Image 1 (cartoon, one colour):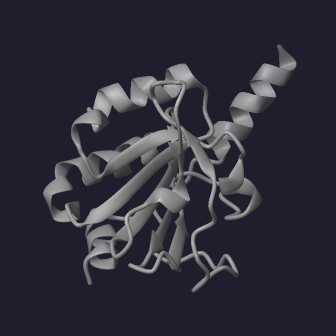
Image 2 (cartoon, one colour):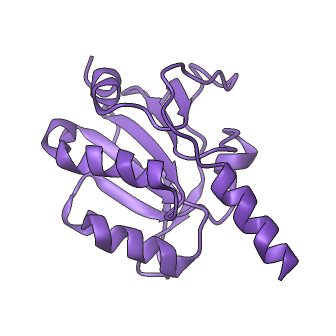
Length: 164
């Protein structure tokens, strides 16, 4: 029981409110790492190398229980038409049931430019240092990292970076 309480504290304390400053990962201008995402059908994997060429990509790493992640996802969904030319990778390290609940709540399956799933290899933490959520990374049309943010960013900042 003590371990569960500690784990809950660590996960919730990693949930960060608003930030405006990009986080320097050391991977700026480097291409998006190829890694697998377990899709909501629980069988299929999507590899990030399969993303469409010539389109910007936003990688949104979240925890389903984080209120700031939910607020940021709500801002994205409320402005989804402004992201029609952007590929959105909405991924989590949480369990399958929690991911499915998050997807259902935001009706993410109805958006063709949104790919959702679970980072089963923990790549977001290992490579991109996503120690806090929400974590948002922006990639240009050549899939090179342009900026990354730990914590919630405003909807206007998000749109400004996605559509300069």
